[in-house]
Length: 113
Length: 114
Image 1 (spheres, chains in turn brown, yellow):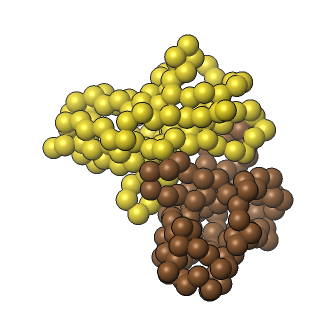
Image 2 (image 1 turned 90 degrees about the horizontal axis):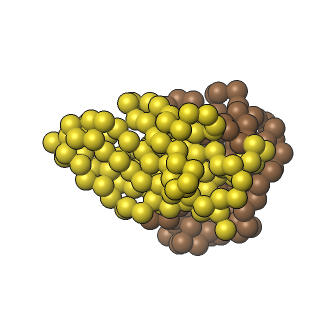
């Protein structure tokens, strides 16, 4: 449970606000991920970083901006969001690609008003 | 297109009975298959994975899954369900040893009745 932490756990923001989500992994992993989880939909992969380099970017709107300053920290900067962006945002890490499983944080519940 | 299907939104089972949560996949190439569980207000937790070798893989909390290549399935099973197994279960697939991308199913809610 403490391997991947996320802050804040809950966030309510207006459409004109700017906020950031933070993720930290304590597992010594090389890859970090952002996912969006909405009810009754598959998890949507947003971004993947491997050794601080972005390796996946799944057509995510520019109002979401990731940052990976080192292999232990990952941020998601949010600005001018829309109500449909309300969801659970999950951070995950893994040792590598392919056969390695992911370890998830508890998520940030985001509500855009 | 590559995809993962979990055909049941919800599965109900009585405590002590065996449980099965279904997953089928459609990919090109050799799949790496995973099961995750999500409890309320938590992130996903890894249960087990199939990479290669024995088709029956064992994982955490007494769960196991059977890889069936001809039926392109990877069903999750447990011989005797517990009330504490009630949660949301996700099947996922990766294709290729160098890819970071998972394809997740929509999830199956398991409810174990006392």
